[in-house]
Image (cartoon, rainbow, N blue to C red):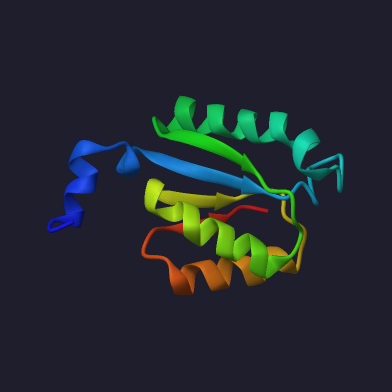
Length: 112
């Protein structure tokens, strides 16, 4: 607690990102929900590892409410070095990204 920056020396935080979705805009499939989108998020995690050397954890959320997504990711954020928002429908993805960037001190991005 006295040296929170040591989290990067003793944990996986600086080497892992969360791949977060609600499954509402999965490429080629549309709004398929969180469970059905999980294999796509697992594939994204493999791409992070293969091409970036970064571990990633797929997180499929059972909500489409922007504020609930933001609050959930904020609560999970201490465990991750970054957040990739994936396959969340527009325009909510932009709102969620903006709110998370305002509240977190780690990178938050999406590529949709």
